[in-house]
Length: 301
Image (cartoon, rainbow, N blue to C red):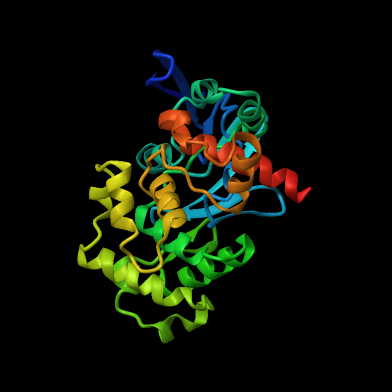
């Protein structure tokens, strides 16, 4: 019989004053960890909602990716998610990375303040905001500037192959994301193989800022969202949208609210140009992700 593990997590929801608690059940199946009855974790929605660029599905629908210097394969079956990892690795890396200590059913309930966001939430149910590495998020979203997702993925994959470390996992070669200290030693010509164009100089500038300690991403995680934003936009090539993406996806500030052309249109059409996103409270970033995924999916149909 597999060993059964559980994790109790609780969180206070400031808008309604409720304390929500849930139990996550996961099993050690030997070669995989099974997360049971996790209906708020949809692999396709989580990996294809625009928040990350290093996860891809194979012909069997299994997702492969690299994060925190580790490779992982995931699959879904019925109501369960299966991760090809040891229990030690799951609990030390992937539990946090997939934000498994957050109860998204209660977050969704707290965010459903009107019919539009309610519809977007129902459409996007299963999205989880990944707790990505701050440096990787900063570099990735600089590379995403004025770019489309397939090309962003290709640029980042090449960057990792050229400058990351090889990770042998399940018979496949995978590559870690290169450290800021590695890229800080390069010049624009060195980045020519990744074909990032004008973004190369911004990547190197960001790498130097992080490597030198001028920008301390760990420290920014403890600051207010306004203070973190002011520090991030000091980096050459980082504007408002990129800073908000870094705060939400890399610094784990769930009240950050990235706005691109999709979001600007959706907000204008449904709330007006003067809408204050802080109406969504401490989980505004998750509201943003539901709205973005919903409206972009409708436009692309």
